[in-house]
Image (cartoon, rainbow, N blue to C red):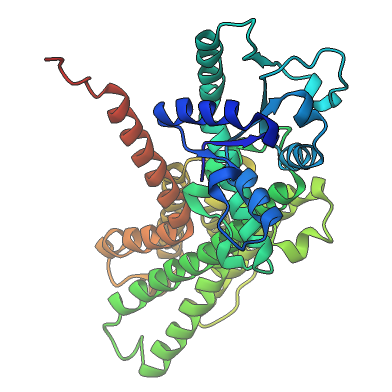
Length: 407
């Protein structure tokens, strides 16, 4: 990836050679066709590649370059790909027709009537303006071009921190359609991967939470027979599916549903779906424990609220921190477990006994169970929080690093 591509007419070769020498002495990487095109290559393909891989295109303005078809093609390709163009004048072009897209730019004059050193300093200042954005623009263009040439291979899409950094240039007006398509496809693929990861993490948290509960309470054959343990494993998987689905809905509506649900209804749909999934999951938990199906009562509603409130909060509160969602889910889920146990113990001692063998287990078993469910449900959000905190720490350390002492 070069810093500068120079578009010029062969009639101005001597001036361009001097310019390239000065730029090279200033440690600029220059792409110019009198030295950069290998023998027996596709000439125009190499030119286009040089333009796309450069951060800035310098167009050397002269009567000869304005009359050159090739210079016009180079400038048009640079504009098509959103490249910054810096026109520099090496010979007077007054009275000549200059393309409107070049005439509208600020020119730097290197004619005999101007101070060459001052003009060169002005050129260097212009080259260094918005340099990071230009580099990001070029990086996205090259990645997008490779993605297009490889038949939109998903493995070439940007992801993670790289995608987040690239998306910072989305507001730039000089992005072309290919770059926008690449960034949009990258975001869709990133979202798809994150939703799949959220589901499996939620599934693992739900299944492990139920599994921990079952096998910690596996004390008496009269209560937990081998067949009942097999049922428990199956139920743990079903419970995990519910938690995984709620983890997905807490983030967004899956793509296949977004096509049929009005955008204004998607938030209430997600909240309602989380509540319904939580109600069903808690009812199945009660059914497994009590081996019978009971009606809709206060403990069932309490379980639904406790299990779903963390997910619904993430639906309603945009950009809710992962740690807050984790804490809310854990506390609310444990509250539902604790209050359900207390109410059943006051009503039916034998039901309370099936929930937990003794009162201390409400803490020793109930809390880890709630934490496992909350951790699986919010693992992706917690991971994002930790990565963001790490990046902020690194940035802060870099910004306050003392300058080396001068000798």
